[in-house]
Image 1: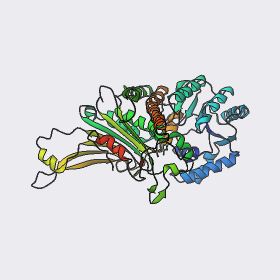
Image 2 (image 1 turned 180 degrees about the horizontal axis):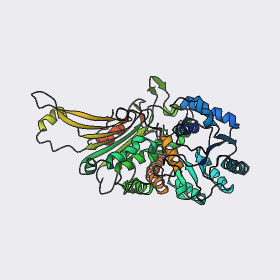
Image 3 (image 1 turned 90 degrees about the vertical axis):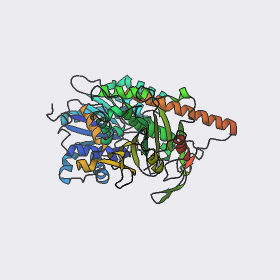
Image 4 (image 1 turned 45 degrees about the vertical axis):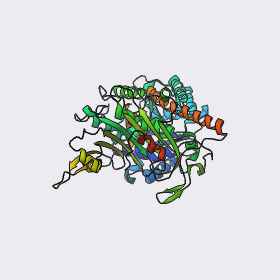
Length: 512
Ligand code: BG6
């Protein structure tokens, strides 16, 4: 046993899709950073597996180049060589039994060479269509062992996990033929962000916020996950997904769950995930309130300027069907039907090519009775108190309240109290993947998505997808033409329809 409880145990980590984008941008820099912090044990091996034919040497230099390009730390050439001796590569096909037999032999060799005690982690950093063949072949090659004799086998699986409820359930059933639930680590990289984890600390580590975090005091909650970039070269992938699958089913749902959940009995995987599932179950499925109209807005960005550069409209993007109804923006008025939140709308929105890259949660409180300040209120339109959890960038927390402006008049002005991570802690937060990889190595699944969680999130999203399909069929039937989605200007906060969603209830989005 390692004395430091954060040092990973001996292990062979097999990375499928090792030459791909995610591995190069995120996984390898994360591993290297863990290594440099002394959080990997001396007895670890990384075995890259992908179709491209590399030698160990070529793979090592690919990793070296990736670190130079994507790591936020300089590569330290003096310890690079020590790290590199742990890296290996095996070319192979994801559908070929012989490749997996060779993989099994290779893993055994590394096991012996690095004394990894039979511990294995298989990381699926590949397109989703090979998740099933890989896990089937791992099983056939004898690599999908149930945990036994003190050694462990784990599977880390990237998103997208399914494309609707049925396919997610189907993938879960498939995985469960070969692995137990506690061997499966479904990634949502938002959970690896320090600021996302801090939502729980803020809420449950302080005595003063939780008592007012409910329908008696909160007027509405707004969650924005905005990105300034357009689709760029990802048209082929994105047109099959859209904002609701790409961002809402996973990242946005997680933010909703952490903001709205009840306190867990302890900070462990079961307790935290039980409460997240509970609150997701309380999200009103749209099938119960009819079609999505009035609750959900979807749109596509048109042609325009982003960061001083002209980008083509979504429908003109390479890889996108010219009559596509895939949304690049979605806003959803969620209703959480439980004791704490009944009647408090959760407005969530996410989109590409928006005004800026920004993720934040705004908890907007009810206004005071205002009898005393009525006149002042009419004069200045005093806004409500707000707590803003800024997830990225400029990570921090802001509390807005009213203060008297100095002077003989009774002038009231909103001011903020600001907490900024960087200022408070004088260091940057670790990369999300670093934390997630370490947790998977340590066997802590608190920050990974459980089977019931992924399914309930898909269930709610699928009700929206179904109602959209209904709208599209109806448009085709009545007009003979495919439905055209509303558009918004790149660099804006979304279409006017999203503003109307809130305006209908006398509210407006917080755009910063
Ligand atoms: C990914 C989506 O899961 O998250 C991307 O597939 C998106 O489309 C990305 O750009 C956003 O992540 P982050 O950490 O930059 O907010």
